[in-house]
Image 1: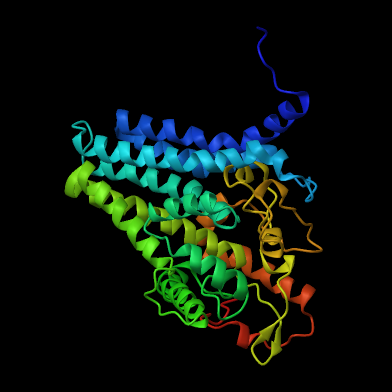
Image 2: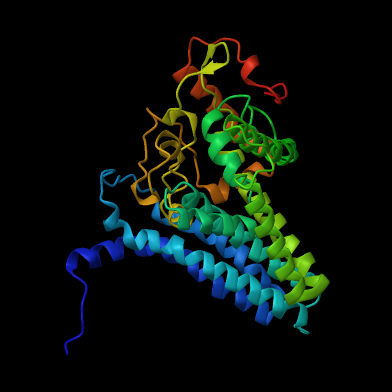
Length: 381
């Protein structure tokens, strides 16, 4: 029988989707570091952070927009990478939890380096794919998202993101919106504390509106806690006490990566207050946009964040990019911007003038920005 071939249209769609599968290459790179040890354990963060930044510099930006009305059946190869990633990450994490504590060639620092790399992957890729999955109507996809978040002990992020962040982005009620001149090192402990409490309150209040107590089985926090306990038990069984410590290390790195990105995405951007606690509708201008080609491959178009908040139900290949007349633009992709965020003087030098320009452009009538700057400090300019 002749070999079956894909129709030309399917081949074209597969070819267009393949760059978004580059994230899978990080898994063998991570294992290479675990097997060889030494400086090889640094390869995963170097590739993730710096190779894609170099590719951004070489390849530039992609400002092409797919037809947002594209039928979902044509997105098969794009969806598939988000579906296969969860079992790949589970298998990788489980394998490393068994292998690394027993690897005589790895000292304690090298073992930590391997799981630092694991955290870079589970944060940069895993949480990002969970973000895509949690926005879908399909229950199986949402459960895969829960699984990925539980692997980094941040399962409540689904409730916080869907019920709090999307509703209150760009307002003082959203912990994740970084205030103007609020450095990352002040933002990070604040958002860790506030996002956990706000997500629980949001679910509790939803249950209360149905006449149910917070401890009702419909509270997704039972799922969150159960999955997280399961992964901690897996770490203990596979790697003993060392496995639990290494698991916690990768979770911490992943959470740090997530909140760095959250910090970048909305820094200093606010929605107009209409009075009586009401704000204008979310628009593309309320998120920083980036069209850098390679980092959008790695992050499945997360950097087209202006459109994600404007149309949260769009799957990642259909997210639109905007020019500077509609949305503020980041000068570099997220890998570079998150490094800058770790150095507050550099961050302020790069971003504060852009925030002030954004204010002049979109809200020239607002003279007093003090009510929008809660948690901020005076501008040192």
